[in-house]
Length: 316
Image 1: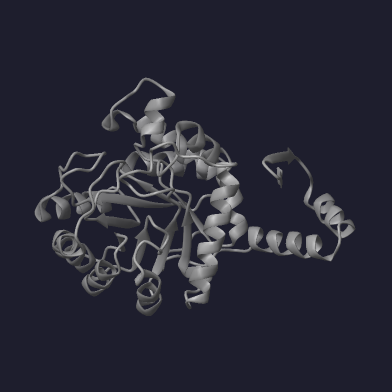
Image 2: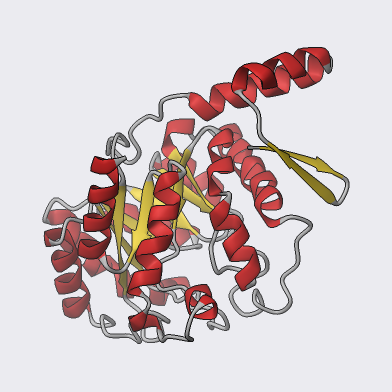
């Protein structure tokens, strides 16, 4: 599929790569160069991310050390409970454990970095000492530094490393891998009438700009992963549109992460199920992403997702 934005219209067509290249030659040097560079980024082999090969789907298990998470209602708010949950996710086959100390659900209240550090530091340290590959889900530079000192090797920032003025500099200085995500607005207001010209391409443009900012700051492309931010400032229709065209993000040249697990759009498409009853929709979303080459899946239900991905990967 080829998408072409013409003002507020988006035109879709299908073409063989050879035909697309031939068309670009006839459109002049700028178009020819753009198409050539895009196809090169689209098809290039991805380097390992966070030290993990991307030759197969990677599963990132979620540990929320928060009292108000949308997905688990604070079940793992205590350090001991969070560590035990992280260990169980590792045993279920998680390749990465994503530890967060601040809820970013719609309407969530911000948490001071000091409190966030107090919540996550013992959890990250304990899991890292067990040999786990740990990412820190934070939008604060101070938390990134503390997490790295505790053993985290990946930064997962819902603000695309622009929510804190120091985040981009700190991420570059730490030398860690980074996940940059798209969010329209902030958690307190992001679900108040989100609007896009065409969500998949608007998000592509934003993430392409953030990757350029990362590269300019000294972060290597192989250390960058993009996430379209399912559920962050998007209606049900936006989320479906983004999920159906998530493969376009490969044109940026980095790894792609999908975090659709237990998100409310699944309930919006079906029967209004609560977060703990959205497993089937979550796994289905992961398979839609897998069919479009998504490399990393951030999920709550590690065992079920791994089973589904392994079956898909073997049968494809």
